[in-house]
Each structure stands twice: as C-alpha cells, then as structure tokens.
Image (cartoon, rainbow, N blue to C red; front, side, top):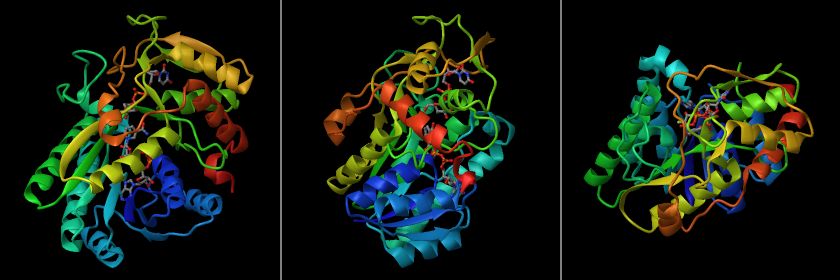
Length: 338
Ligand code: NAD
Ligand code: UFG
C-alpha cells in the first residue's frame, strides 16, 4: 500500500515507519521537524535498510500539503502530526487549534483533491476526560478537560463528518493511552525537548543522571499505593496497532474510534520500581503536591481493538522500561548526539 505519514519523524511515527517498511509498504513522510530530528529518519532508513520519500512541510500550509498528496497519490494516510503538550495548550490554545484542527482540515481537503479516502488518526485517551467509570470503553462520554484534548475531540468529529459525506471513505480513530518505551535496537526512542512533561522520559533522565530526582505528583490518590495509575502501552505494540488499523480501514467504510492500551494500570511507584530493575540504578524520588488537572486512574477497555483490529498488546512494563533504558543509556543526548 502507498501510505502518506504526517508527523512520521516523531516518536510514535518513527516506530510505525519501521513496521510499515518491514511489511513492504511504500511511504511518504510529511513533517515540519518542529518536534523531531532528521537524524531519526536516517536511523529508520539504516535499521530497515529501506528508503522512503520525505517532504519537509507544515500541515498548516494547505498548498504544500495538496501538492505532496497529489504527487504521491497514496492509498491511505496515517496522521500523527500534531502538538501534544497539555500545559503548553493551556498557554497557547490558538496555536493548538491551528496546528491540530486547521492542519487536519487541510489534510482531509488535500486527500479529497488526491482521491484518497482512508485515514488512521492519532487520537488520545485524553478525549474521555474525568472517568465516569473504568476501564474507559469507546462509548464513554467525550469530555476533554484541556485545549489539547479538545483539539483531538474536534478532529475526531471532523473526520467522522468527512467520512459520512465522502463515498467509500474509511477512518480509524486510535485513542492511545500512555505510549512509552523504545525500539529494541535502542537506536530510536522518545527525545523530548527541554524538561520532559511525562513520567517515563523523566524517569529515564533521572536514571541517566541528567535530572536529580523524580517528583511524584501526589500519593493520596485512591489507588493501590496512593500514586496515579495509567495504562502504559509499549510504542512497538502501538506501532503494530497502526498496521492492523490500516488493514481494517481497507476492509470497510465508515468511522470507528478504537482504544489502544493494555487494559492494565500501573502506578507511578510501580513504574519507578520497574525502571530501577531495568537500569540497575536506584532512583531518587520525592513526593510533592498533586499536579493540577491529573486524574487518579486511567485504563483502557481493550475488547474493541481485539474484535475489530485483531490486535492485542504483547509487552508489559518490564519490557517497556528495559527498552527505554537501552535507548536512554545509549543516546544520553537523544538524536542531538549524532
Ligand atoms: P511527536 O511530537 O514526537 O511527533 C509529532 C510529529 O509531528 C513530530 O515529528 C513533529 O515535528 C510533527 N509535526 C507537528 N506539527 C506539525 C505540523 N504543523 N506540520 C507537520 N508536522 C508537524 O509526538 P508523538 O508522541 O509521536 O505523537 C504523535 C501523535 O500522537 C500526536 O498527534 C499526538 O498528539 C498523539 N498522541 C501522543 C501521545 C503520547 O503520549 N505520545 C498520546 C496520545 C496521542
Ligand atoms: N507524574 C509524576 N511526576 C512527573 C510526571 C508525571 O508523578 O514528573 C505522574 C502523573 O501525576 C500521572 C502519571 O505520572 O499520575 C502519568 O503522567 P504523564 O504526564 O506521563 O501522563 P498523563 O496520563 O498525565 O498524560 C499523557 C499525555 C497526554 C495524553 C494522556 C493519555 O501527556 O497527552 O497521557 O494518553 F492525553
């Protein structure tokens, strides 16, 4: 299949490219490198021993996007490109709406012009907001609590409307839970700029000695040990879900939202302990106040993914931490080390 991959140079994108290339798909990556390094794509080429097209461009630039899609004439699009920092979205909401929502509208218009009717979209469990019940199934009410989450919910709506209005269109909205870990080679992984916003890359930098200690945001939640619990999903499992979603999209029309998680919740303290085992290092932590906006628990119902995509996660938190540590210890400065 010819697959156009927006945001393909990023964390989840590069892991998915490797599996797409291994499966023999022909690819065009479209990325503005606002949160990625070209070195990541060089490593994907080395690891896969395969080449692919690259267009450096911005999804907000409708003309460039239209030309890129018309030139490549894809059978399907995987749409990773987007901004993803919750805190930043509170400070710069218009940047988020323009990048994530306007960019996605531009993409669908360019797909229309190129006659492409199949899309897999990176959505997020954050669209559910505060849990009314757990695990979150796909019918849980959608009530995001921050601008980032609202952009994801809006784009889901835009894609659903586009699917209804476009004959033979097919869309899969993948609602990721908490993606972590790295490729087994240790050559690609998550490379956040500045201070990491998320738990796993922060732990990794503490283990590597780049940060003094981890601040645990609250230990008075109603969980096993009082710290927040999440459904961490290995990025390699997540990448595999995209291949399954592409196949599924090719087999039907209409729009489906599908959770991508493991169905298992892990607390902050449990993840720290797993990372200590994986790295062989003891990690200094201090408990501080809760982070505003955080929920106690999040966990995916996984039946729909198993049923429709025939996909299930394989890896547990130990494998997630081991792969993260291989990447972190082998690339202490991320892709900037090259
Ligand atoms: P990432 O930042 O590593 O990757 C996003 C990629 O999109 C980057 O390569 C960036 O340069 C590119 N990009 C951003 N804006 C662009 C624009 N206007 N035009 C062209 N390219 C642009 O993030 P990721 O973790 O790989 O996430 C991929 C997608 O998955 C995002 O849409 C994100 O919102 C979503 N998601 C991520 C998580 C997570 O925790 N990582 C969770 C749920 C959903
Ligand atoms: N945490 C700490 N210390 C830190 C960072 C996080 O204790 O330095 C805790 C949080 O309080 C939470 C857990 O670790 O209990 C996970 O926090 P993350 O920031 O890693 O993940 P979130 O679940 O808060 O949010 C992430 C992404 C969102 C996405 C959501 C669901 O940031 O964009 O997962 O996919 F929507």
